[in-house]
Amino acid sequence: MINLGMASLRLYAGLVGYPSGFCARSLRTLSGMTVSQIDEEVAKLLELKVQLGGDEGRHQFTLKTAKGTRDYNPKQMAIREKVFNTIISCFKRHGAENIDTPVFELKETLTGKYGEDSKYDLTPASWSGNSLFLDPTPSQVPFARYLAMNKVTNIKRYHIAKVYRRDNPAMTRGRYREFYQCDFDIAGQYDPMIPDAECLKIVHEILSELELGDFRIKVNDRRILDGMFAVCGVPDDKFRTICSTVDKLDKVSWEDVRSEMVKEKGLSEEAADQIGQYVSLQGGMDLAERLLQDAKMSQSKQACAGLTDMKQLFSYLQLFQVTDKVVFDLSLARGLDYYTGVIYEAILTQTGPVPVAAAQNGAGEKAEEGVSVGSVAGGGRYDGLVGMFDPKGRKVPCVGVSIGIERVFSIMEQKAEASAEKVRTTETQVMVASAQKNLLEERLRLTAELWNAGIKAEVMYKKNPKLLSQLQHCEDSGIPLVAILGEQELKDGVVKLRTVHSREEIDVSRDKLVEEIKRRTSDV
Image (cartoon, rainbow, N blue to C red; front, side, top):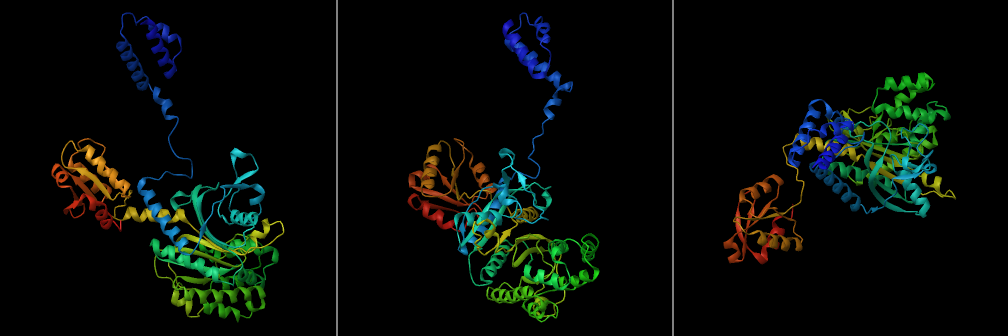
């Protein structure tokens, strides 16, 4: 008994941090005590420890996710799955194949490919020294490495996977350190603007099917931008840095952009003002035709090539019936260095329709627009990236788009919270229930039959559950049908099939049950 008491007290002392001498002193009180009495005394001492503030240690570690990450409950995952299914279905509808690339790349693969003013932080993978780097957004660089390494010259691919970045997260805006990248790319030598138009068609389809709200797809061309900078008097060595400043026009006013170009980047006021005249323009095919006749822009072969392709692009977009949402916007810059041609970005707007009429009327003036609530997709043409990795410098022209999937998730979750519509978190078609006791074996037998027939079925894990509890579970979970067994049904060889929503019941022959369930849940 004494030995047992000593062991108990030593265990307690170790837990609460009391000195070992405590055990010897307390042992004097143990004479004649039973094991249960010793346990009671230990419990009292533990309670005393809590009362005296001894639980402080328990609060030194707070359970939470790492910064920039989050957990997702079943409702949120159901929304995510719906979004993924919509997007993947669209990609497959357009003939895309699925590939996968590692989440980290060699440092030399990533360094220098994003542009010197890149906002993407190349993050060392801590488990692998300095040779491996986590791949931040976007994922065109690993794709280009994949093409060069495997000598692939044409492919239409999609890739959805988790990636990571190091910069400060903004989780309320759907910006995380761990997030999904969702890409579609077409690689290969094809006639101009046909693949580019398909990428824009895909963005239009996805945003329309997800019903996120009104949206616009801005398009521009890096050749048009560079030509514009040249005719406006921007020195060659300032093209990229001025492009990076123009890229801020969707977030700050022209006055702020002009101030940065003049005061921080050293551009002349005259050149800045000329840029301002151009970047205020929006339109469609008519604007491209106007700019081809523009006295300054027509002087740049690069700009003219871009404008000619822009006209061709809009002719294909008209055939694809998506010009209602696409607008040629000279303020769109997208700062990544590897873009070589068409660039585009899809944004959601809070109010007002897309300025289509203004975009197509040839006015060429800044169209009236809704209030932007953020970019949800972006991409462009990057014809030179694969050649950077190919030992012989062989180029594979590429064009692609990335869907801002995390922002889409955030918007869909907010819509679900605001609406009264119930989000189903399971796909169960039928609940196997019983109206009487002692029918567990029959319920399990029927459930197995349904599973074997490919029916998504559930059964309650109780021997004798109340029928009301089983029906309530169906109501709460959104299960559309209940297959009810009873003594009479078993004798007659039927199952009572109940529609949960309408509460209608019919007797179905046991051998016809699977067929009836499939018929009634074909659209579930």
